[in-house]
Length: 343
Image (tube, rainbow, N blue to C red):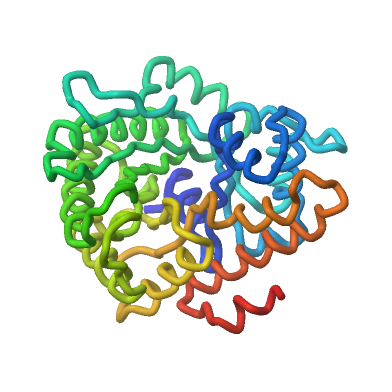
């Protein structure tokens, strides 16, 4: 049986040596990142910044797709070409963030559920006409310090929303990226993170099955299994890699075409090192292990650019370097020498 369009697109997004750039920051998120570098958060500055990333020469060698924000998918480069066309001509698939953000879950203190299902069918139809080939929906799962949260109810509410979103995407011939993020915030241990991540992924795939979502036509975007940001014990890279892959092998069906990790607040180099260590584990694994990073790909070019047109070339070199390093990590070939080669 020949693969469907959804399967072909999903496989293209995890093609060997390539990963996804998450450039779908909301206005509030990008405002915080711009502010750290003294850049005004205007529509024109956001457009110039995304243009700088998308027009980096050679980036299509390492980037398979870009997740766009609603504003960005409607914008164009200086020469008048829509960003969707700029990406497509570089061999990069355009995607779109479609959730409306996490809000407090009623009757569940400390837990959130992502909103945005209302009107999603119509929005997906519009995004498809604008050129989007895949979409993303992020759920957030917080690990409470008291050991009470997340509750099964909180996990299941987010899993059901992810599954309903995925079903609507596939109906619209758009590949859904399913992103259940277990947050790095807090002082929890790596063992507690493993427990919560495993429970979350079990719930997500149960919900996907209940909504008749075709696994071959989606991608999973999970967080890595990490101790909390304020935990006393900092797990070695090898321990994170082993725990993450062990969790995925327990929960993710082999039918899924690929796994594209979020960086979740990790530093550039640490996110790359963790991905590399996973791809060095004895295998083969049931699915390609790739990346869908925002900060871990963008922090260096944003710092190099600083809003200055004269520094665009420096920023593009920094972006290309981070993409090249993560491409190497996909093959377990990331090295300190490669990291230093940007100097």
